[in-house]
Amino acid sequence: MKRYVIILFIFTVIWGQKKIPFSIDVRPRIIDNAKILVNVQVTNNVERPVDYLEGFITEYSEDNSFLGEQRMVLVYHYEPALQTGFSTTKTTSYNIESKNISSFTFNISKVKFSGENRVFAWHPKSGFIRID
Image (cartoon, rainbow, N blue to C red; front, side):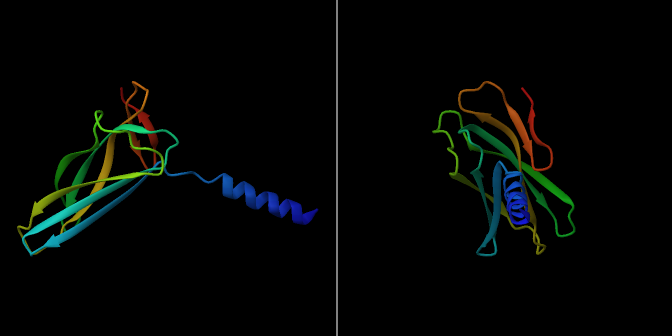
């Protein structure tokens, strides 16, 4: 009996874990010490296709001071929808203006699923927030 309780507890822990809807990978690459190419890859882990995906790439200095922000649309409404398990990648470039290395983050600002009119924002700690 004790063995069954332990097995049931293990399965409960495994199934009870939260799934992360989007995996975000930001990779900066320095080209010829003149430019930084920043690749942003977003993987859809939601069980629905994504029709529109937009966010902001933020640049921070070496001491985590905010340097700037740039809008980036990864999936437009006229493109094929981003299916579950698939990823999309976009690249943007920055000029190197100092010897300090910048760091970059990407935050999703708008998500629209196929077949829906509602628009959501997504944050890793808050989840989906309906904005329209």
